[in-house]
Image (cartoon, one colour):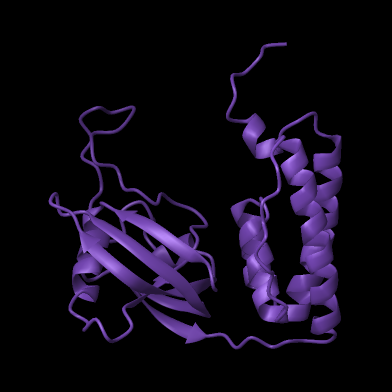
Length: 230
């Protein structure tokens, strides 16, 4: 929630979804659900695969997600509101969306041109001591930013004021910290804001300690450089 999501939509099943969203008037919300993949492939094969070079790739809305698409996705996702949907000359789309409300995935229907789902909206319960926890998380997050800027050997240029509303803080930090999908998923599906903030406080302290001991780069950047056999 709150995260701005730019999308490059090129697969036919997602093009079909965008074409359907464009039927909604511009002055109304053009919403769709974003759910992380637990097991499967975001992009379905478009050419004969290995090891059989003649194998015909699966096509259709559930391609890459197995016999039961519901099992391929994490249970909790987020509704996204598409502010702009721009079609290119080749039929693909540029989309700019913003996350809004958390939802739980109840069922998935693969009978149409794209996957649709039955969703249950999840309320955002503040939990206990969310305000105090948010203050602690913001302090830890600023320290994390400083350590990260130092590890990257860059200046820290974040003059913008950070929010102080606990739920907004919790989602901002979840989006900004370098975490893998399972870790982000745990934060997204936390039972309340306070629980999410408590987990983020642990994560920020741990990540800050790791960055402090790295030579110059955050771990994710180390994977992008050439591999040394030494």
